[in-house]
Image (cartoon, rainbow, N blue to C red; front, top):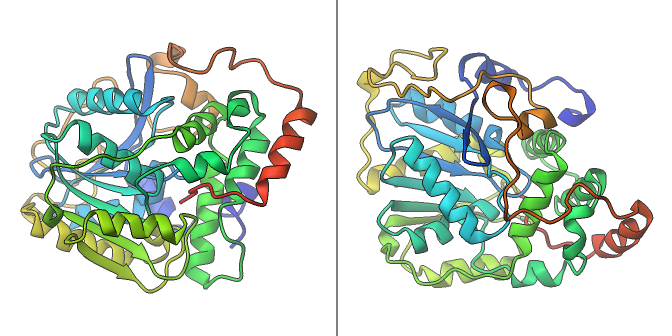
Length: 359
């Protein structure tokens, strides 16, 4: 399958998913949140946070499978936030707007790091974690990206090129190759501001402190073949949570939720049952256009926008087509670009040592 960004047809199950599961967009302050929310609203949600190259769409296989078994799954895009404290406050406001008090979080790569940071500073809200191909600190990524001060002025095509260098080239097993193609297509939908903010989050020097969450409420799900996150960093996660449940996938690459969905979905179900989340299959009556999956307690999002094909405009506008305010903590003069020739030289010199966590 040719990369989605190159114009190839999307996978059939993804086309079906998009036809029945609505994409919600809601402006909260200056942040535009894009997310899918599917499954019985009476069930505590599992919130999926993608990695640096992912979008809310990359978890579509989990949404379809788990929601039909009676679980509620929310998959989000990381909004344009520029530091980890801004992420914590923004994510908390998102949960408040959804009237969600307690969450179970599944995070991949950068998403797993952000999940741990949120659990550290908002321990009462996080009931359990599933961490996949992730890390505890960002020092290595910062060291591998000496041109990070120029990220905010770097043209989009260079940011995408840098991001994609972290995804291993083939040959791949067919399902892994398809997962890479899908994610590459999703990267093509990201705006320059989206790319900049994610890269900055990935290189802002920070580390996860002690969590009050017991190891028994944490599952570490890693692939055994390869991933963009160095093995040393993944080992640090295992050492930090020595008695956490381990879920090891023999293969799967950077995106096992796409390449090995059956195994991932099974591990997610086992995790949710182990931490006390009971599914409500009795509330599942089939897919409905409003995303309720048959729930009798559907959440009505008055501020959400209709699902339209995404482009950069979608990411910069809020309800009723109004422009979303730029975050005051965003990069200064982000509309001005440094001459491409200058940035290209600096970026190109760093591409071959890219350690960027792109899953």
